Amino acid sequence: MLAADLSLDTSLDPDESIYAEIAAVEVEAVETAPLAADSETSPSAAAGNVVDAIFAADSEDETLDWQEVSEGSQTQLGESADELFADLDEGFFDPETELAEDALAALTAVENSPVADPAADQLDHSDSTANLVSSAAEFSWPAANDTAEIADQITEQQPGELPLASDTSTDDSTDSVRGPPAAAIATNSLFSSNYLNSDASVSGDASSHTTTVYVDDDWAGLASGVDPDGTGPGTAIGTDAFATIQAGINAATAADDGTVIVYDHAGAGYNEALTYTSATAELNLEAATGNSPVVDGSGLFAEGLDVNGTSTVVSVDGLTFQNHFSDGVHSEGSVTLLNTTITGGFNGIVVSGGTVTIQDSSVTGATIFGIQVVGGGQANIDASQISGNGNAGIIVSNGGVSTSQSTITGNLTGIVVTSTGTAVVNQSDLSGNTSGKAIQNAGAAPVNASSNW
Image (cartoon, rainbow, N blue to C red; front, side, top):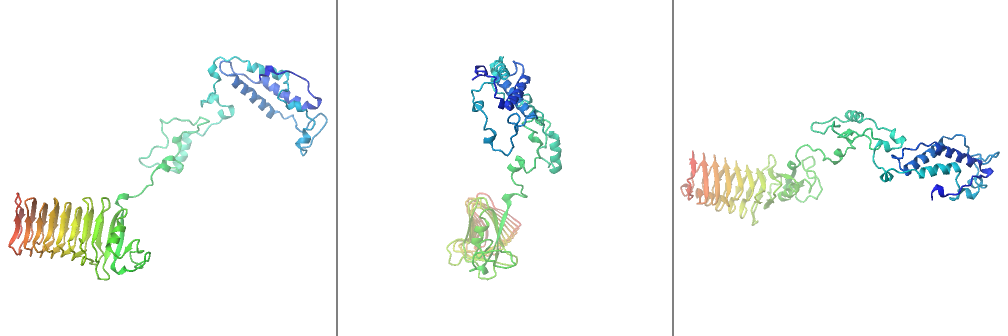
């Protein structure tokens, strides 16, 4: 219903003088409210100005006292609301109550204001300060560079980090709605999204982390969780302390590269057949300082150490493998044997593809071959002893062998090279093989053998 459609009754109850006074103040506010140009403001915006003016007049008027209900009478604040308004005419609050002539005229003028552009009636959601009410438009955030200066005092910028503020960034510091630009926030602040979303800084490469565990045959029978050696390196059975080498291997390489340090306090040896396969975690088997642990395969129909997979990497230092039914060490991957002793078995070492490096080690007493290379593998032997094996000390069935500063004696034949094998032998002792043959070559290429005896 428009204000023009309302009927007008200017009469007021004498007892309602306080309300007449309020109405007069509001009418005056309506009449004095500035109206924007027709081409810039829609009726709805103009009406907003009128309403603002009315509320301003109400808040600024200090002469009205709501304790004065009627002329000559005073009502105490402690009286109830029902008592305060008991004499009011219910029709005063009726929506159909007529407005005073002056108020009616003002509202009629507003609603009849011409609209230059229909699009102007649409709400303007822009963040222009021209469209903000005066109280918001007068507000301003602190300058962005001030915030940056504070951030600089708290967090020192590190090399490679984004600057705390950029000359090319949009400065919204004067925007009363958006506030200061995000660039003014310290990059390393706890409230910075860069900090919250960044990965934690870790020294070193996580992929190179090594888990170390300890194995001692003297810990057999201890309950899980027990500290097996007091002040020693192991802390708990089943965590970093084990009584068998295989259990140590499994625990050490469960998530990362693993090192297994082996003791031999009981002196009984480890009756085990070890196996390892991993494309990601390297395994190091090491004898504890001053210890010479023995992996004994008596009664086990298996290899002493079986390394499966071409990507598997294993290093052995200071262990002895003996009496295994098949091979002392069988490898498809990359294996390094340092200070390692292999005794007995059908074959000492079988290189089945991949590469095996043998240094400062010995292979003796195998039934057939000390070292056999098959599947295109490569054996690199340095400063080692290959002696007393039943047939050939070294046979290259398919692949290659390189030997230097080693002793290859006491075998039936020193080195045998088949048609699909190659060999390089330097500075080694090939004497004393029972067949009288130091090197037997069936390959297409001659064996490179120099400075041998």
